[in-house]
Image 1 (spheres, rainbow, N blue to C red):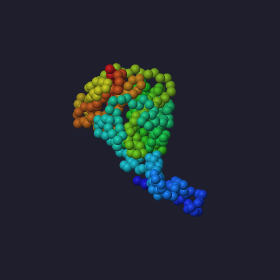
Image 2: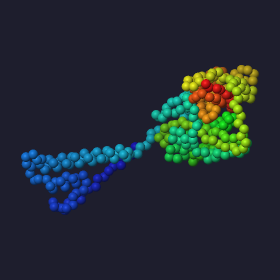
Image 3: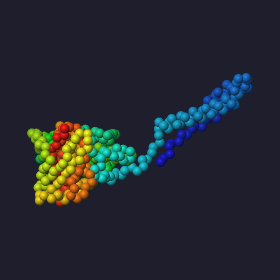
Image 4: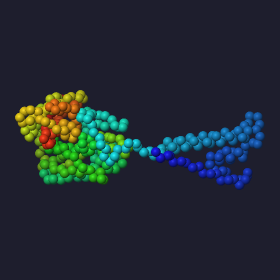
Length: 347
């Protein structure tokens, strides 16, 4: 650690003689000036000149120390953070991890306690989209940056569930769900190919863990709207159901989310022939669950508990409030990732 800058005291110029009109400079100036007006001898009730001079000198030194301490408090010496994370810090969590801390900073991994993604800015970070308009049905590219409180592009992110950035895109009627993984350029600009298949207003969620200059990690989910101009005909949500079919796989779940209480939701994937499908790890887990609330599109991302082969994939979800939600369950079989979607009503 570099030493704090030292303060050099200027030397006092030599006096021309005992009657010099120029007083010496520096901390000794006050005793020297007063010394000329002190009586030569001490009488009753008076302090002799030597004693008073000594007291004034000591007082001046104490004052200098106090001033130096105050200036040090106002201007602390620079420090070097120990253990600062590299440009991309490897960081992973066991399945089912909820809110926890790293280096004193709280890292929330989406335990379902709160809906997030409702704002462009949160926890000192801002999502800055560089492209916001797309032609419906035509391949495009989404580009954006994450900036800190000083408006600097953030370039250090922790790798969480195998990726430094998770991007969720969905239309405002909760159709067209996509789970994407952008790549970052050296200047902190993220990009990913994106096709918005139909006209309407779409919502994009950037789900990441930023690494600050001092190594602190902060998990944040930020949201922004994307536009696909054209006639928008929103679809009503499908009726609530606990089972659906995806590419011949039957996916069902047990459990009912409740407000303010963690409830287990157990998802089972069956093959077309009936037995349980051989699920494969996807992004470090046997499944991922995203729930979006109808209306404000509040975002909840939940990671599963540990699982043995053949067991259901279990998530612990606490709904942030009443309403209708669309749940998206990602799973992988035979190297192919599929998504099962469910509507659920939370009272």
